[in-house]
Length: 264
Image 1 (spheres, rainbow, N blue to C red):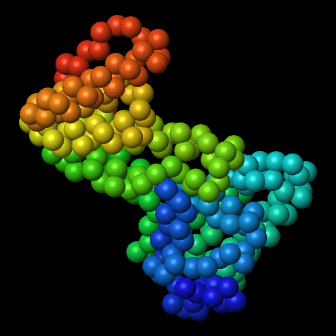
Image 2: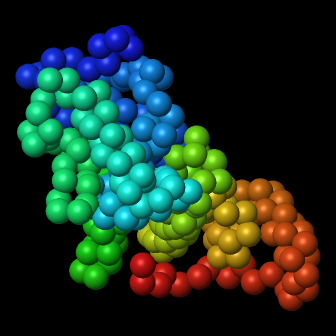
Image 3: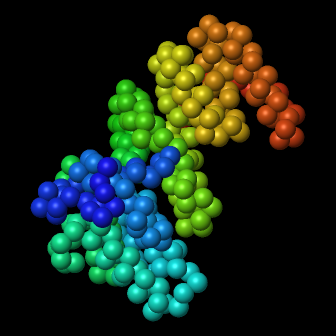
């Protein structure tokens, strides 16, 4: 663990950042976890904010509105400048502002550049979903399945849970959870269509772990378990599904016929 007094290695050896935002934030310059407990909480929040944007430039007005909404514009911008300077010093001690490789200014925007060899799970999740769309457009179901598995491997939990109900993180958190759920449902459908009932059941369970009210997730799980020969599990899932429907005031019979694959 890198000490608080010297939070990062000499700048000459700094090459990349590895960041995790799903399921809890983790920062690893050059693959080494750092202790940044000595950095002020709002500065740490700024780092997480930039990391969650997956390398996209973010205008300073968006950042200040999210992190310093209670301050006048001038004071908020000043806090942003101080925060960026602090992060640069923490990540790249001794490097001049204009030479920073990680916290990059693009006009009035800032972006986080992880560097060659670095990575962020949010970026990887987005890239995997883009690969799913390309594979589906080309009719390559095997490639789509591989990309879907990759996306779900990257999604290890809610976005930045340590930021709780902070307004700036809620929309992104909900969006990523929804997309992960949809990826799991699509994976279950594709696996079912490929005759891989047990794999389909695993994917359907993942979808329901993320959203226990997904109607298609329940139908896919019941069908997959039945086709896999696990009749007792299928019946239990059917009963749980029907209880869920009743809790929502839905009295229609549960339709557990396999759903056809639809476009991602």
